[in-house]
Image (cartoon, rainbow, N blue to C red; front, side):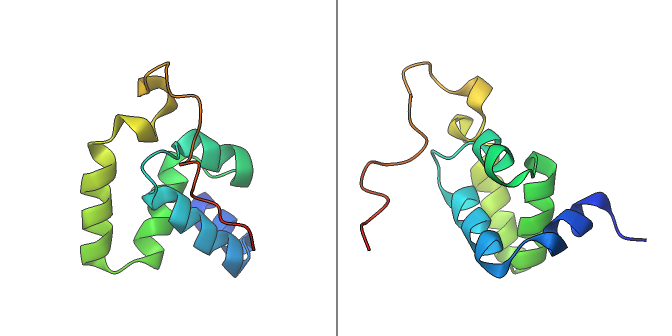
Length: 92
């Protein structure tokens, strides 16, 4: 029997999985933004990252995320109004 997280992740396209991994690594993108866009809560994202990354990379990511208040909307400063760096998205 598949877990709820596994079933959700398997329904995503490869491009979506790649974007979620990218968003998860970004310091200013809160988990709530990922949930709004893709329907994956924090524990779902953790499961996806565990599945998609090497163990050492996952451990490094978890240590990094655990120490970032910007990854959790409720812990962010009220002065932060955006979820990404203004230069993050480059025109194609």
